[in-house]
Image: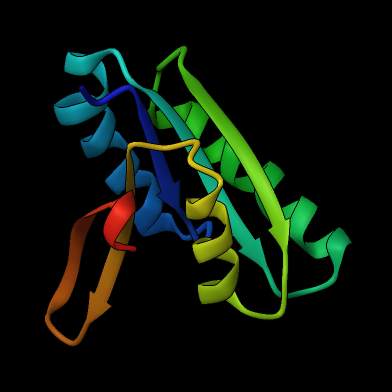
Length: 113
């Protein structure tokens, strides 16, 4: 059963659209909790400012009660996400894949990430 979704975000505008899709098509039907995780490689103040901007922007577009945020400070996004996945607090990890042709939502079961 899908109860806990983690969405790895870079706090970009495309993430707002992806969250809208994720909540409407996956989270809401399963009544899953969604945690938005951002790995901050900048200074702490900038990371906090980005998260506040993103929360406000997301609140304008997405209405969902089971939503949380976590800011992780690390020099390595990959290593931080692996350590987060190892905590076992999610059923799946979701992130955008940005490539030359556009953006694709990627669902990655936590046991494979």
